[in-house]
Length: 173
Ligand SMILES: [Zn+2]
Image (tube, rainbow, N blue to C red; front, side, top):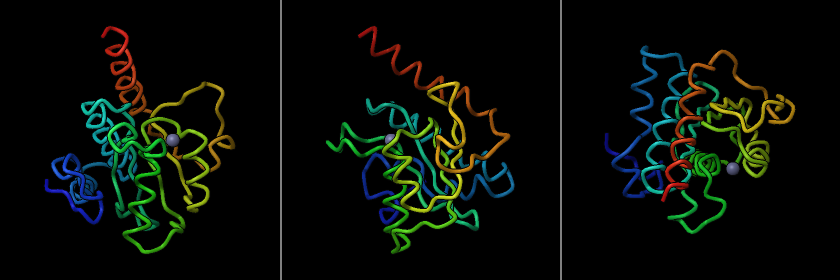
């Protein structure tokens, strides 16, 4: 493990958690790139959940499939209403590349992005959005504002399950 402060923002929790080098190791022949990206996003989501954040995670890859950033939700600890997982990976990747345009990148997120994140992804020129779980059955690709990666529904139940467990626990506190 061992986080990269340049990539994960230097937060102590991230340094002990999922790093981009882990993502690259996972993707190195063990899983399809999309599956590895969703798995990393799920791990970041689970980590966020253990820190009392809503368990949503995201991973971003560049046009060549290299992992640029992995992050979980962090609005509570960061005292920042915009610190959604997707915004965090977009910020980290832009800083890493020194460019606010992340042209042709692929965003994997455990839950369908909210309007703020969808808009940010569009501004960043993200080309593909892979969602683990959807908020609504009626959502379409046009609603997401980018083409969705297909064929990875296998991971959807886990993304949704994390959220269900988190909110169930909240209701019973
Ligand atoms: Zn969001």
